[in-house]
Length: 133
Image (cartoon, rainbow, N blue to C red):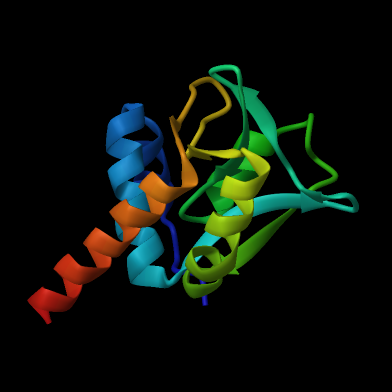
């Protein structure tokens, strides 16, 4: 179940720079156990950033909807379980030569990384949180 996102938190996180949003994404993806994408009838929405094909991802559907705006208004938000992302998506994206655009905003790019790097960062965050329990 998706956590409640207050308007204040939404605005505060949106005001952060790309690196800060990246770390927020890692924290929330691990804590919530899901990654949010946009999809339409043809599948997952992709974009071009830094001359790479990318799949944009967010830590909450509200951020994805805000990014979608009018251009992708026909898309729906979709939660990918973190385990599924790590077990299947990372390998598929690597094989397809697709990068990850982490937490882009309507008016700002996100951090663009290869899927293995994002997966490694997620696994490190999971290990760190598990040590704290």
